[in-house]
Image (cartoon, rainbow, N blue to C red):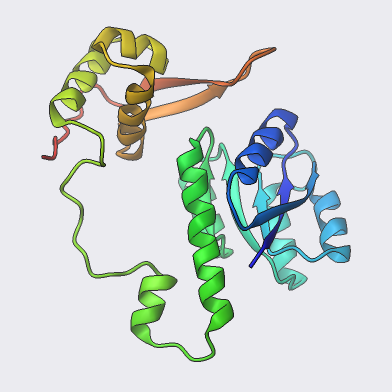
Length: 234
């Protein structure tokens, strides 16, 4: 099963990044990159697309307006939001209009891959089934498996190192990069990004992406509340 993808993104650098990420994942093919809602609707009218990777902030029609138009016109396509919008209203709007996933910029390749892999698994499941049962729906579509909340750190993270990372973050002031924090803690940048991603997911860090004239984008982090008390799972 090959899933045809349309990227709707007005920022050329972000669109290129999404394209490169997409190329790394088996089972997906890029049909086109368009810059705004009008171009997206025109393309969908003439072409079959299973999945749209959709930005929110665009000139003219924004991403939510485009998503609503896709639903009104009953195009048989799913949508994953790829956006810097992180406010409650935006997330709720995406969920209410049936977005398959919601990726907050900037994100790592692993999260992008998870979103598309999960989507492909659901699509393949729906394609092969004619009759459904609750267990299959829970496991394959709604991702309900009865497990309790995880009490362990993700693989590759160490509780003592996490504590040290958090202490250094609290001691810092203002924004910082993975490179600078890795130097403070004394671990590699690759390892540091894993700890920062965990803390971001836990809501303890915010991150914004900075684009320079050349080179890859730089992620800049900021502590949301240095007085937050966090638990360090075993």
